[in-house]
Length: 461
View (cartoon, helix red, strand yellow):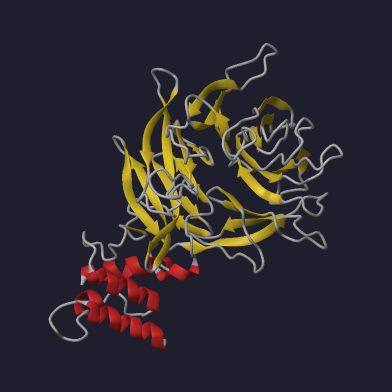
């Protein structure tokens, strides 16, 4: 009976599990979310394509507040006070955890030109205010396409900043007043598929370190793509902080590897950095890969620790979304396909070393195809994967299962196929098949049972 109960819970955990039940954010009809940021109390959902009044693509940010153990309510929607059409406000969002929200609007006007801007909102008296607008007049295209913040410091990416090519630009700013602390510009490049570094494609910051990806950078040998690492303690002659400490090179040397640094995630607790490329094809077409770097306390340099590939199957898109915090790393693989699951998130944990722990799948299947391909966030007590919020517990086995091993028996066989098909059919008795799957009483579980469930799906039973 214990086995039956566990099987049922694993199958329907995303729907009706009474223990740390996942919560699907109520997204209004017609709204598409591009970016998320979160804390244990708030979730911010950026909707850059939202229409405001008659302004198409002006954009908005939906604010959700936690109202229970894992229940969240949409309490307000934030707009730019000077918003206009095609601002794409909400394309990027970041929250410092202490009442300050930063929102990117890469199409917004700044200093007489649609170069892009960011907005700062401070929580006061339960309200987010009208916001303060910041920009960089030295940037000419899509300032705010990527951003991150830590305490009172912001890093802003503009990968399409143009100067003889899409060289990109990164701006590091003082959050309190919008002053520019340091800016870095990429270089023209001959890397296939790029006309420049595209510095700032993704960015991250924590403590004294900040990172920015430049997938168009040409570096040593045939390797393409680099990560720029900035250190607050490295100053130029004028005393400006956040000089370049190090360039992290693409660990893979192959002509099929052109997007190193599409995603970066810097740990909010430890000194670990994930670098993802969901299009990497050296093992299989668009299988994807994630490289894990760490800060060596002895050398003081960032070094490659491990390379993760998931199943390395064609179209797997491993690394499409990534997050790391403390002892947990989450890596999305929206191309994962194991009926009825479509999309998965791999969880890696740190004990004496980093290692694969388990996999999170959305067992509602068709309700969320491509699961793990949008956004992943980690707060102290919660995971946010796309629009699904899951409370972290010491035992996540109710939400994490091994690929294909539906009943967690340690093997993948026809029993798993029957259970998975029952879940797809929406049968309330899913799980009881573990003890009574022999529908035709022939003394074994085989293809007859699989066909029985398929027939039930076909007839709508």
